[in-house]
Amino acid sequence: MSQRRRLAVGVGLVAALAVGQHALQGATDAQTVQAPRFEVDPLWPKPLPNHWLLGSTIGVGVDSRDHVFIIHRGDSTLNRRTETGADANPPIGECCRSAPPIVEFDPEGNLVNAWGGPSPDYDWPSSNHGITLDAKDNVWIGGNGGGDSHILKFTHDGKFLMQIGQAHQATNSNSTTSFGRVAKVSFDDKANEAYVADGYGNKRVAVIDMTTGAIKRFWGAYGNKPDDANLGPYRPDAPLAQQFRNPVHCAEPTTDGLVYVCDRPNDRIQVFRKDGAFVKEQRIAPNTLGDGSVWDIAFSRDPQQKYILLADGKNEKIYVIDRQSLEILTSFGDGGRQPGQFFAVHSIATDSKGNLYTTETYEGKRVQKFVYKGLASLTKGHQGVVWPAK
Image (cartoon, rainbow, N blue to C red):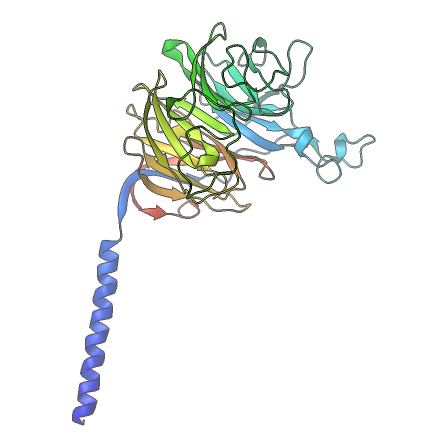
């Protein structure tokens, strides 16, 4: 072999060793994090009876028995010609029809109950939005449509208990008697207080007495006095807005005295003390425009509520976030129609075992269950679709 040939072979071997070492180093350096691991349950829930369909599914809550409640917009978001022919007058086919607005499933995904809708006893929202259950398993809903300036409270089985506020009131983020298109209600049961993400018309968090419905206090972004001025569209490179943009989509109190607020179109979580004092914030996917990235949050069920699970309906994923540092640890999901994928993942809730439930609005029109598989070393970054392991 000539000297030139030997030199070329030697250089090739060195290069190959370098590439191999680099690949090995890359594998060694692949970052992992300790975080909750989930797998989608593609067989949950079980098929609905009566040719029922769900429309845009706009809220999810879990009761003390781990029964899952969802609320959806059937008639207004299902196409009479292509989806609900049985509801047409006259019917144009055997299938299908809208399920009642509120549907209850047991932990195995069986239908337990279904109820809700207009009544002379109360003002059913023109566009229902959000469903949550307090410690007594009472059901609370809001609405984000025209005239939805009130909250409704029902028993677990749908008996009307209370309407808080009157319908058809003007937007006013400083009102002490009405709301402005409420996105969601959450609870500090020990204090007998409900936290209202208020919401699609108003730009505030309002805190109410759970018994009387009286508004006790409220605040805007950074704890400022709320201002209803139009801020214009969100721009990632603009100075941070000193008020919330619509919608203020969640306000979730924790066991250690904090409140985590979804400032959805501003792509940020803001954290407050329960008196409205600002603590800190974190931007999430800050280049997200339009619907924004911070749609809803739920906490892990350990005593410390160590993790936030955040639904991002624009980027179609669930983030797992360290609650104290607000660092994103990992994420999962993707856009699509198959189990574990999302179309506008909107609301999120956990049960006592740590399982995760999501609903999808717009054309998503479904609820999904993600089974908690314990803490695990997961790739830091995006996991993709969390399909069941073989």
